[in-house]
Length: 478
Ligand SMILES: [Zn+2]
Image (cartoon, rainbow, N blue to C red):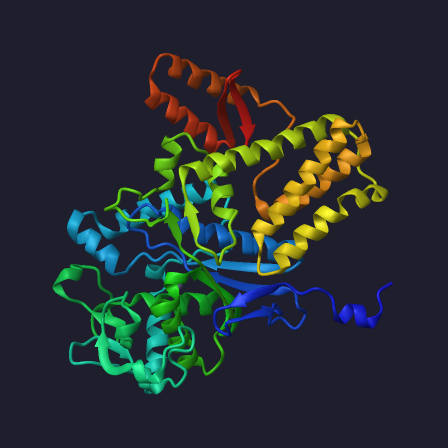
């Protein structure tokens, strides 16, 4: 029985909050302490997302899964940015209609998320389907006198009218160029001025324009996220995340627009994920080190191996992505799988009983303590691998009984709801899966690698990966 003092000192999850620059205890706005509103900035769908983007999406997935593990009832909203400067530029360059382009890359993004076992958001609003909400928000800002229509007919947010502007990026008031206007969606801190809420249609926009009280035009990128997040999560909500490149101007501008319109605090906890390097260098098309998931699948890596690679480093530390790193992830997963399969063999049909939990207390306690500490997943995996080493020793000594093995499996399954790596199944693959794998093997023998890749993708869609081992192909459930 816990006494009151113990209840008061129960562990809270702590997160580094970009807004306070502190490790803050997480307390949701919900008076019952149960519901959590989480908004994550989604992709701009004009191209395949790259692994740098997916690092942020995997981090956000870990965050959401851990909050759920901790008993919170998470409502996760992620937008799709389907009208924005880069999209319009691509439409102009390629001639592909905007709706067709954005639908194509939204579908590709969703496929990639499935391959990485990223949980789909509960709501996935698209900017083009929320033009009315965006116009209503801009109108509120106009009525409060914090937005104005400039001679170029575009509507801008006046940063001079919002005294807390710069609070997220920590920009000195002296550095702000209020009154100077910036129409682009992306700009540097040095250009922090009045930013566009509604962009008057120009020639380059072609027919991408909507009617508004200020004439035909389209929304700025930042106002899209303010309108969609508040529609689904309310004017004040708990958490907002993205890559660190979104701190300025995107999130700074979201705060300004939202708080100026509602007079309420917008978001309590801002979490940002550090960037990803490739072989120690910034990822760029020029350097030829620009990876999409498709490129990496073509090299024979699986979504599961890439998930592990993107997940394994603490989110606030830069992640140096290398192909050797993915090979190491493959080896780590093999160690985990090998143990789990052995445990399944020992446990058989035995169910764990309460008395067996003692053997896994260290694993579960260590794992939770690490993740409570600002999602320190590298420490959590360290705890898991110490446990795997010790359990392998116990196995070698014949010291693990069926009920003990069942307890470990049960604990691992629960921890895997956070890691999302999947647990290998003892059950053999169903006949249709075996048949597909057989066809793939035949295609490979016939050197029809295109067909073999198609079959591998088909298996993946059905939830199976086929691994080529020295003993022949092996089927595993994702
Ligand atoms: Zn956003």
